[in-house]
Length: 332
Image (cartoon, rainbow, N blue to C red):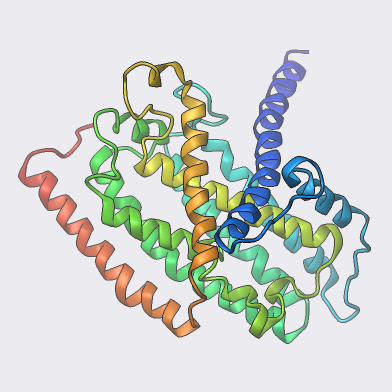
């Protein structure tokens, strides 16, 4: 009975985390569309429910009842596994995201490495879907995505090193607590900008949505998918976008910490502050999609390898030198 109690407790904690994440995906899709509509001076979702709030639920129901078509020439096992892998990896990463000093599903000492590893594995679902479809457009989209994610993962990894130099710990709670006096966005602002742009490329968001460029590749790696299998790719993509926003909030914006330790800011609970910071970063994601035109693929690669990587490496040297010279390196 004791083991059953522990099992039920863990299942409860997992559901308590995953259900809000999935509901948040539905909410941010609506927010995404409303922001685009506002920038482009049109209505956006406004018919299904008040202010169109139920539009995403209507879309989900449509996908549930649509027929799932599996191409006869595809590798059927991998074709089915690809969206499952994509969605699963996007959701399990949330296990180490701390919403407060005590509210975290798995408070592990190498939380940042866990996040980095899981987000890196996300490309496998896309490659599996593109290759298993046995069609040229999905395959080209998958190859693009693999090259794109590898390119920008390198920059994100180097940027994280800057933060770790200031903290001296791989634990996400420690990273947040280290920002009690000064959020890292102030001393590391250039790294925050590069992290934000790299996150756009990492999640295949415009202007870097080349793996699914409609004008060139129809829908890229998702071309042959339909019904709930297509929706699982869609869920995984938005869950991953929210994850990158959460990483940005934790690494640079103080996580759950209040911006000012004065009344009435202290009345707002820590998890609310983290959610607000995630929404702020997502709003910037949506604005970029509505405003910035799509890059060419050669421009994307040049930006990642010839601009962001050298800049982030130079900043690591600068950060380490500064901390060493002024004897500010953390001692743990």
